[in-house]
Length: 477
Image 1 (tube, rainbow, N blue to C red):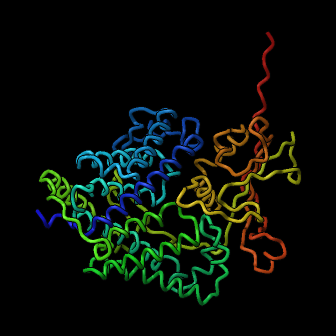
Image 2 (image 1 turned 90 degrees about the vertical axis):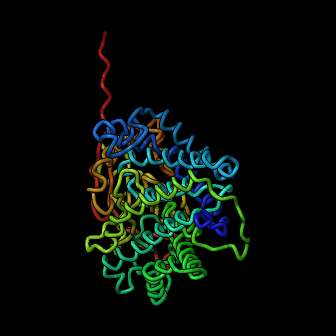
Image 3 (image 1 turned 180 degrees about the vertical axis):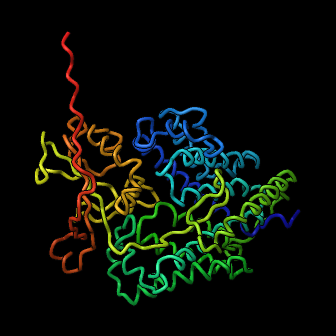
């Protein structure tokens, strides 16, 4: 069936597949480098304990069949290898059926990781990567044209990402309706970037323009994705520009980059690169794609209904395979920034005003003189969860005590997640505490005077001083 494919979108598919492979590579790399302290067998939220209480049908994962840290690491590094091969174009060098299996492998591996990742993997971009990754299995390779129905489903994903985010803002915090949210957002976002200070200091009228433009991009432009070309391409370009603006202003893991990759699938680049005539797709491929697409359209009923619900859910998966999800961000915006600062003491009996030394995280604010850095699309999971911990201790209750315990032990896997520890692993602190501070960006004059981009004020104790367990004395023979 010649109507089944859109040969003019071969370059759009190429951009999407290469971009998706690059994001898969980053995601698996983050999993391989961070999992031991977070969800390893001796981690803060161990996978073995999770799979023991959660059945396979609720969280499908290969780790229900077997788990060891070595096996998890092998899966993560295998995912890196497959993603790297796909990035190099391996999917176009094999038969169509093999390409589909090649794209299915990183999807299945990352699904297995997300479904046992617990709170560390509870972010919307995890589901977005899995949903887009599943559609990539159906996109085919260079031997067939891109299936029109899959291109439509990719636009449907992009629509839900943008339109859902726009609705959650309008329904949520009043500052979005008053166009004032960006008076606070750049300062209070989870992980500011190197330019966030400058974005925060933009004039207030420009912030109003930014918010108004954001509403237009998220509430009006997504509808244009389903109009004829070149209008759909213009809509996609506007979304890409908006996402690049967000990339410059903060660190949101691969959310913005993946949204850009998905938007590229809506671009009609044939006037620039021309069409490519390919043989008709094999019948078995058409049957598989149309059947799976019909299932995905049926599953889309719940997220579509959610968009128009007064109780709209944000970043929610309606099925354990994360096939069709709902998205959104910043339904409410914090007016002040709170940060949890961890400190350790080497004193045998530490006093409140004693010599406490501060742990430094890689991405989250700590030392007021330490300028934020760019980490996205790489995801610093512990740093992000520390932001949630500052919002409410309830977010941190399942894992914060385990974090303190691991610092008291000088656990090397945990210390590798930090930028700097004031104590070597072989000489851990005698006690650890956590204090809550209010942070704000300095004014231009304060920055010139002090060289610090942050100013912080002590608020209260967050976690009381916790001593290390005294060593058990050896019994005399």
